[in-house]
Length: 241
Ligand code: UDP
Image 1 (cartoon, protein in one colour):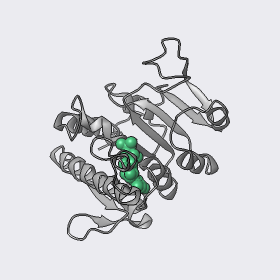
Image 2 (spheres, rainbow, N blue to C red):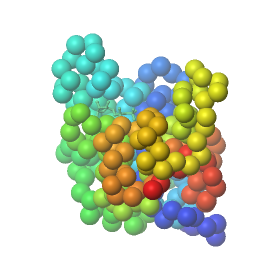
Image 3 (tube, helix red, strand yellow):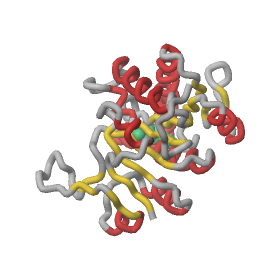
Image 4 (spheres, helix red, strand yellow):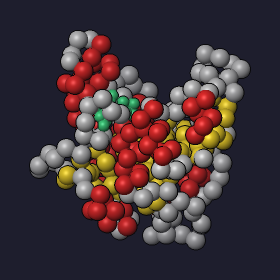
């Protein structure tokens, strides 16, 4: 189904941090948060926008945190990678509940649970208006799901990376600690590097910059923020050339 409302991005790569899925809890998956995200995605699908999705796993396990308690860093990252698959499967199930056609494609083959990622099939599914959930990051340790979002965004010829977080966008400093922190509506890739702003990790950011892929950081918890972005409203912080 598509409406007459115009959208400015035919294909988006939405990255959601794992923390968004935990809602008010300290750990795990909150069903209401999953439902909220699925409904936000459905709004833009109804416009005719194609959606690729990458979900982090900060709500379950991050490699950097596990390595601090004494688990080998590579094994820790493998646990983080597997956790992104868990989140992807949960999101996939909720999407089914809302009659959204979606597929989980994993960077690591897991027979019987989800299909293995290939860029051609991903593009085919996206072109048919199915949501493709890219699980298992890029499939290698020492990376993050931000890198996966940028890589899959480039591979699937997406128009923009939309990074949905719990904050409104990019600030000069942590707004929770510094009341005078400046909010940036627009930044260039150069600004981000010069001001050493924490947008995403450097390897992910460089990938987007090298391929001229715009990045928008926004608050996914703000109702209809995703809809407003794809229909051309200024929401969060946009980063371009
Ligand atoms: N991870 C990895 N390689 C990848 C993607 C993820 O090793 O390509 C691991 C890494 O340990 C990371 C964890 O999975 O900490 C979860 O990803 P991320 O930290 O990006 O989650 P988010 O902060 O977005 O919730």
